[in-house]
Length: 217
Image (tube, rainbow, N blue to C red; front, side, top):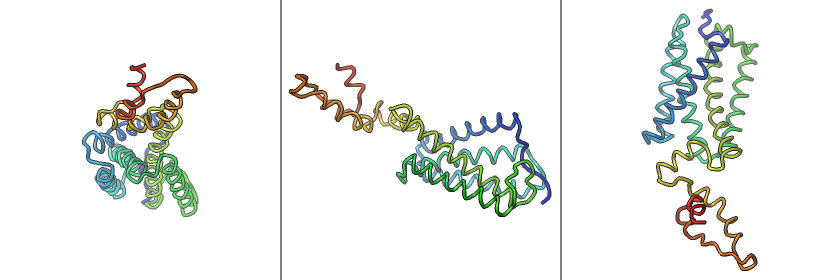
């Protein structure tokens, strides 16, 4: 090949990368959640788009910025739905899904380094190196989505990640049954003869919502 067909890493690159990743995640959520296509089918559709754009990129003989950023965009959209498919449909969970993706990324980078003797992203002049480059970007984008959801769900907002709240909102449950199940035992322990307090938790069970309890009290 002998021609570098990837963008140079500088400030402009990172600005474009952030924009493309944000747009890609939004597009992935639009297809899988807003349009209710589902994570599995969305992953198949977006992976097909990624492979089509990647094939065009690999067959090109020079650097085309629009084509390059199109591939970046498709890695982000496919990565978003694949992460959700692993975490939700396969029920691996955010932590386990993130661990699997970290392992995949390490394997890709190690194989890239072993076969190409370099991990340089500034001068990629062979088709094999370019394949490793795009595989690493796809896996890292998928990992980014999984880690972001993990931090939001397990270590951040107790209501769960943004996707959890959106899904519950479409189901008509603002706080979600999972949150009710998480805190209900603690609420029940507040009542009882030893404290002289009785709290009716039946409405909380029915609604699965702490919001109802807070308004009632």
